[in-house]
Image: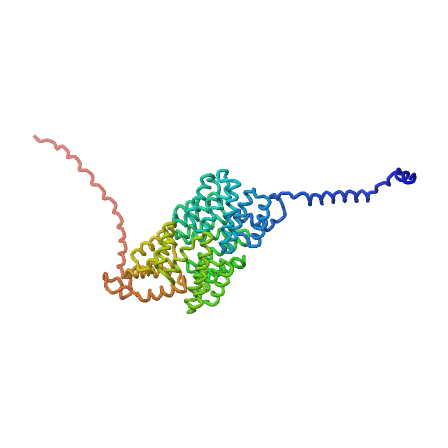
Length: 512
């Protein structure tokens, strides 16, 4: 016991330089480990760490831009876990709703829409409209437009604009809503205001959409090229390239459209919209087998009614009518699925019924749609349904309405030509058939050949009319007389000397 006490009372050995370094290193290590375990600093603008998948997706959906599939999945899982533990976080509910909307856009699965609606409504319950929950309000407007309920989308967009006129996120909602309602001047004003408040991918994309609807094709392409230049992530780049492909396709530049679609797929192989576009371009180039393959792949990734209709018509044009019935049946099933999730598919269903089903049912469906949405797409579809039902007089009025804003669409021109043919107006029929084939000579595997046949049947105007309307000989410029050379001006003669005035008569002496 005494020995122990003696040892304890002995002085500690001196700490050498090496020992001091060891102690300091251990202390620093303890502090660092504690900081790593207990402290998670907020990310700042100077943080050199790259953003994680969920952060990248959150940034994209917050800007209304496309997000990568992997990042989006990570964001959904992260926010779902967070709101389960923090049900009163209104901002996280808004982000989750926006993520669900982007999932619906990428996958064409409208089952995400009810989830997005529940998340956004929960955000508005926690922080209502009166307290300025602009993110949730904007999300509700985007959701309404995605469901093609443009009247509701307009209400949400105008509500945000009224409360916060400088908040740029309201204007993409308004552009889509006004366009869907057929108010193209208001859509243009909203796009102009958006460009004033903020440029970038979303603003340029909406501007391109407005220019396209007004028939300003060069401006539409330029705006979309700006959007591609502003894209930062591969998913954003792929979306802009897909939209450029769509513009090229509508102009009849099939090879260029194919190039843009393939570039989009290289940037983002999960871009199923570009896969459907590539199928359309391949069909236009006569590569039907490859087009069928791509259509089926696209429908496997993003099953939408429009792609099913296009595949069915391609198979019909190839003489494979029995195979065509499969995508036609799929179209009805997809439209029913979308309808159960609140999505309006009346335009594509009306066109299908007009061409392949019951035209009278198409007229009823599209007449109801016209009462809600007076866009050029609805006007064209209703006019075509009326034509197929035998009412060409009424059909022509809607075909004219579809052309009023100025959009250049080969299908629209073809529909109008066939309506005018039914009315016996050969001159107008010829003019609009030529317009359709000039706009895009490969616009449809079924209707483009029919347009060529109809144009050949009409041929040239009948004989008669004003004299020399169609001269038989080529015009030759007449020989005109050459102008006479100007005569040389005569040199002016020097003025003649003035005669001197006569001398005054001298006075003669007077003789007496």
